[in-house]
Amino acid sequence: MARIELEKIVKRYGSIETVHGIDLTIEDGEFVVLVGPSGCGKSTTLRMIAGLEPISGGTLRIGGEVVNEREPKHRNIAMVFQNYAIYPHLTVEQNIGFGLYTSKLSKAEKAQRIRETAKILSLEPYLDRRPAALSGGQRQRVAIGRAMVRDPVAFLFDEPLSNLDAQLRGQMRLEIKQLHQRLGSTIVFVTHDQVEAMSLADRIVVMREGRILQVGAPMELYNHPADIFTARFIGTPEMNMIDATFEQGRLVTGANTEAVGIAPHAGLPALAAGQLLVLGVRPQELHWLPEGTGDYPVRIEGEVRIAEPHGSETFVMLDLPVGSIVARAPASAVFRPGDRAVFGAEAASLRLFDKQTEQRIAG
Image (cartoon, rainbow, N blue to C red; front, side):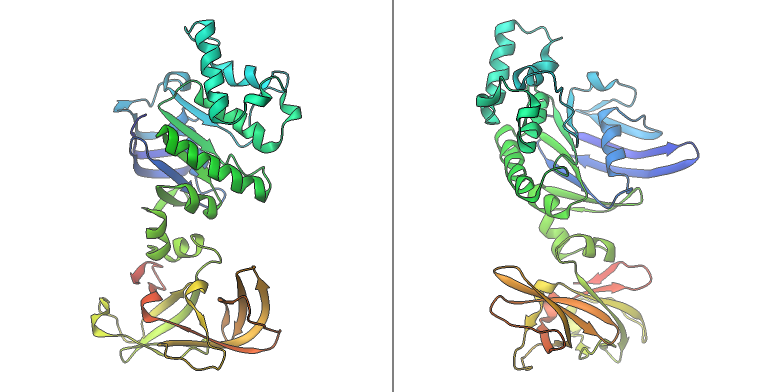
């Protein structure tokens, strides 16, 4: 295991800079997930840690040692790729043990390590099979086993679950989480799927356009996003955003929403009259008011466009005069297109963002 430190890391392709001097410390034994949309620089950052991409600027340390110029094989880290990268002509046993062929271990020691790894990953019954005879999840476990058998100081995962169907992704998330708990290894995991990030990470790193926007525990980012992008990216369905202005000590919206009183103790900075703001509220924090009444400081009324049953709950899309929002309702609730529906929210569930800077002001 090892601590990984990125200090002012830059990546350029010719005159184009794609990673802009990021700073990040990944502690020994920590599970950190880099998340963001395609092209945000997360995979490039991972490949620089692995040594597969040269670093254009800054300093990279693994275990306290500068490794900028060190070859990938000399960094003692293992990488698991999206496309498995296992050899189709080799058996599972041969694939897992491939990284040991040049080691100084005895034949018996190699065989023991392969068997131990296969046991941890529940691959013992498949050791004599070739990849073509395996499911997608089993192939990914073989790729993980090939990384594990070398006993690296850190594991790097580059979107390893994106080729799997939804059921297998859920299963593999659980297996990777259990593997981390068992091994206690340092893991850096890249994904564009915020559900994976929330499920797996000790800390999430949100990236956008080659920069880090926010780093924190999953629920910290969910409850206290630093900016509008993070607020929308973390959580599903995404956070609702409603334009508002600050007038006479109250938030006033044009979205068929009752004005929201701002209490003096809310910890808000000084707001200028007429200041443009964005009010954020998650669908899960909106409460259906079937009679249209309820003691909530925020009330939102709209016309139902569509209702999506999700088993234990129903998500309702409401059309408002200046946009639309999504709200959660009980599974027993019945909505038809064109119905009028009213939802309420507690003041504590509101987030305020500056419309110009997109940075969170409160909540």
